[in-house]
Amino acid sequence: MSRYDYQPFEYATAPELSGKTADPYPVVIVGAGPVGLSAAIDLAVHGVRSVVLDDNDVVSVGSRAICWAKRTLEIFDRLGVGERMVEKGVTWKVGRLFHRDREVYSFDLLQQAGHKMPAFINLQQYHVEQYLVERCADFPDLIDIRWKNKVTGIEQHEDAVTVQISTPDGDYALDAGFAVACDGARSPVRSMLGLSFEGTQFDERFLIADVEMKADFPSERWFWFEPPFHSGQSALLHKQPDNIYRIDLQLGADADAAEESRPERVVPRIQAMMGDRPFELDWVSVYSFQCARLERFVHGRILFAGDAAHVVSPFGARGGNGGIQDIDNLCWKLARIIRAQAPMELLETYNRERVEAADENLANSARATSFMTPKSAMEKRFQEAALKLAGEVEFARALVNSGRLSLPCSYATADDDCKAERRWPASTRPGAPAQDAPLGDSWLLNRTASEFCLLFVGQPMPEARELPDDVAALEVAASDTVRQRYLGDEAHAVYLLRPDQHIAARWKRYSRDSVIRAVSVALAEKQENLHGKE
Image (cartoon, rainbow, N blue to C red; front, side, top):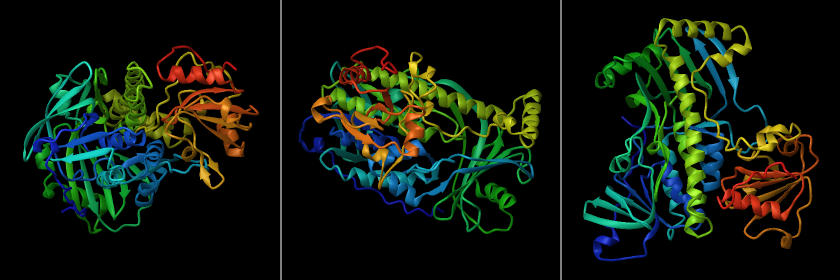
């Protein structure tokens, strides 16, 4: 049925089963999905060795995560696969929302020019995983992927973790400095530690069908409330590469998953939507979901990321994007700790910042689900009124919720003085991700390293001896785009970017001592307010 040619990766007997010993890996990663593979690459970019363990030997079956947001694409670009993903993927930025047989409104997600990466692309998860596996091969001395290696136990000690592993050739144990659990929503590692999710289980069931067909639909997101072809429910349509279309259909809480997955049930539903256009089923799944997370993502030397740490509804594309942004936050910190350049306390900033991001995603996801699936007559009347009003006046569109699409979390704190300074652009306040901008024949984000980096915007860069050690620097001319995103009404500015390209601090003038203090705070060595002081 599937168009994609699933080729198994090569299995190899673990060296430990042949009596060979080696230095313990600094990091063991459990799970070779997009999150786990991205973690291995990000650690390798920082010069840290890791071993990736996965109980399977193929990429994920079915398209699964398909919507990749601009910020996530920028992270993938830093890891070396972003351009390849955009080239293969279906780029889109326009969404259309329908109620029954009328279009209520449309929206444009990226109206500004001057960004390397688009607002969104649609690209099946199996392509993403394949690209990441091939990128891992560029680091043969730093990344060891072990297929058909199933983690069966894990324990931690004061300065290490020990993982028990089962393979076709026998069982063995592996020691590492840290373990990163990227093993999905049903995380075995989470179960082994006796940890559970906190949140809400939604009973509503949805059908996902990937269909192959030739159609002239534009590259847009189409969402229907109560469409004429699927009465009383909701529907979603996304275009993917290779003439594959993703269709989501709400089925109701009482739907039988096994029965609704049968082609005899799926095909008539697709025909009602597509008419007499020929198509072939590529992949089918029926699901319900939670909006939930672990209380903490850091448990000593065992760290959780992606669906192993938090799960949301698929409406809004916050699951896969949130997982990649977890890794973006975690790996530079883990690398610094492993290289003895930061204290263990730095991991608490991963826990704090990504729990905050997860809560933001969970709140948006739960609100979308509540609006899409009203549980009372009052909620249904509100939905009807909001949809009617949204077609008439623009302000009412904020009331309609078919999934608030993924946006990066800002890690700005309440004591950020820059919030009160209207002369500074709000989009580049401390804690926010740096905004991309064209720099001649290159891009700003491509010019910033995976370490701390100073941006001198509209002013000359000081001599190298005046810069702190281990902090890169870039002089940026104040073009119109740069001025809009980084200066506002100011004539010049200095920005400090963290290795994950989030803004650590900004000043009107350069001070070496201020930069050193800001780096120290970002590394959890000091706690004080440094933003907007000079």
